[in-house]
Amino acid sequence: MSLKVDAKRLEALIAEIFARGGCMRDEAERIAMRLMGANLTGHDSHGVIRTSRYMDWLSRGIFHAGRKVHIGLDTDALCILDGQYGFGQTIGEQAVRLGLDKAAKSGAAVVALNNSGHLGRIGDWAEMAAEEGFVSIHFVNARGSVLVAPFGGAEARFSTAPFCVGVPRGDEPPVVLDFATSIVAEGKVLVAYKGGKPLPEGALIDENGTHTSEPEVLYGSAGPDAPLTERNGYGAIRAMGDHKGSGLAFICELLGGSLTGNRATGIEGEHFANGMLSIYLSVEVFDQGGGFADDIKRYIDYVKSAKRANADEPILVPGDKERSVKADRLANGVPMSEETWGDIVKTACNVGMEQAEIDEIAAPMA
Image: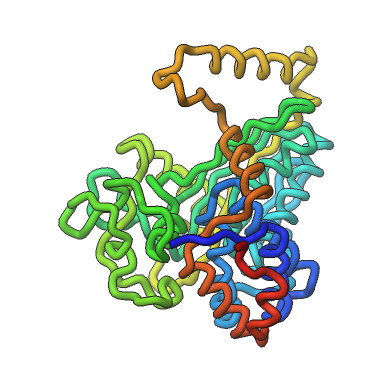
């Protein structure tokens, strides 16, 4: 069974949880804003469902509040950064800012980030770049999060290894392609495990090589606190696109992990850290003829003019669905399962909030 919560009220509650849990107010609000942004664009797997996990990691010293990136190498068009295990919503913003400042001066820049807390929805960073007129490309890995089976395998060897590209187009909304290289992100398995939207059939694979959609394959008998406890399932998420998605995941591990210094997944005993290799390109520098935005518009119109396979389903380009979902959820509330809401309430109580106070800030909509 699902319920809905007003987006602004829910964001305020999440910010209060992180503020009372050990973050400075500005960082707490930043984390809440980014998590809520994921929900508003339909990426619930990277949204407020992660509140309890983040707070657990903060309490155990896996994440740290108030951290700044450490700059290891700094040139006109390149920097290598250590995230110091800070919250990814803070570290990611700092890393992107450095990249954009360099690209503004040099026309292009590369940023290698390692040891970051969970970076959340990578599309956030592509949108941040696009708002300032930069194309961006991001290869991401997650050390300490071995979840995805390679093509032909029945055992996890990759992280979900996100890949993202953002393209500005003048005054129009940007084109943002953002996806895990697995069939589903781990957070979507968590959503299903917590009573939310079911997984696509065959999104997972068990230890015998059988395709399934049962989230217990990943979490096993972890119980209601999953995934705060260790995952003890014997299966894995499947790579998207068979050998093609598996190959792209492998490249994300090499570039987002090995090249950045974060290292690829599968290292015994190391806790979670995101690595991200980002490339930033200045449209102002590249677009010498001034026709970039117009040609994108022409091409989008051309793509959407194709005969539809289903008359009731429009042809979409990256970013269309997210904007539609955002408009609906801002107007009608953010949906979530009762179990997810219960986790948020429990986390709020754990940092000293009373039920009456929680209800006053963000009670579910009638």
